[in-house]
Amino acid sequence: MLLTSKALRRRKFIRENEFLREDWHNHTWRSDGELGVLDLVLFHKLLGFKKLAITDHDFLLREKDSRTARLIRISCRLLGIAVDYGVEFTCRLDISFLKLKKKKKIGVHIVGLGFDPDDQDILEALVTLAKSRMGRSLDLLQEIGISHPDLVMPAALEKTEGVMSSADVARQVCALNPQLDYSALLRSLLTHRKYHVSYEKAEAEEVVAAIKRSGGIAILAHPVKALKENFCHLDEIVGYLVPLGLDGIEVFARGQKPPQMIAILEVCKKYHLRIYAGADTHGLKNLLDYVEEMNEYCQDPDVLALLQKFREWQQA
Ligand SMILES: [Zn+2]
Ligand SMILES: [Zn+2]
Figure 1 (cartoon, rainbow, N blue to C red):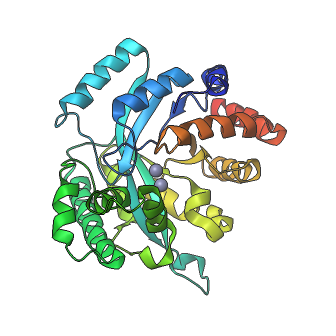
Figure 2: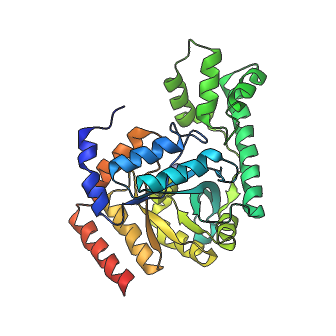
Figure 3: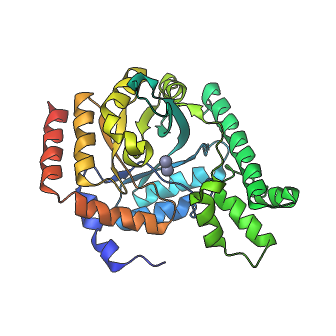
């Protein structure tokens, strides 16, 4: 897909909005994204961003393990854009503290940045999550009715780095069964109830605490998408995570509309949290959609007024 001229016109908007210039949330092919780090860097540069973070699901690209990551950081200096490597942790959170009648555990995503990449607690959590994702992939293959998962898994593992995603499973199943349509299979794996395979996740409290212990920043990712019907309890949920070390929330994220952005900003103000922006890029289309949505939502007069107030709170 080519960058559209409309997207390129939005460069100025991104460059001039101090809240949007830094994009703290992006995925590569090492989890479930379609792009590599360099693609992400170049597209962000073209669109006017000043900084981006690579935050694959449950996988940390460590510069000491990756010559490419080191080279890309050097290239970024030349390009005039900064890159950081972090992780989006797949967590569960027991919300019994809300004293609701229904479901007690919900899924939340915590973006961790700037932590010690050699921290043992974090590395152990990542190994456990990667194994858990592998188990999920085997269960998925069983659900799809693949009789020889031993043929699929080694091929998918040739990826060698990162975690096994539904996209990896779909890709390999289609390689062995060319009559299948990759996009249709992936869509059903991601959305069809019968392919919903639950797997072990990290405890949100432990992840936030480990990120803080190792000197990092813990951000609650895309709260609207993550909390779903529990978004109305954002205040209490954030209030529970703040004493553990939560630093901020993604105010700017795809699908978070002005009224929701306003609700999140109010919570950020109440708990003295930083506000973050995250495109959650899985492919170029996501990134272009994000730029378009932010261009529209950040023109909302109520959002603009609150952002102005936020500047004043931050300076006070
Ligand atoms: Zn997420
Ligand atoms: Zn994400």
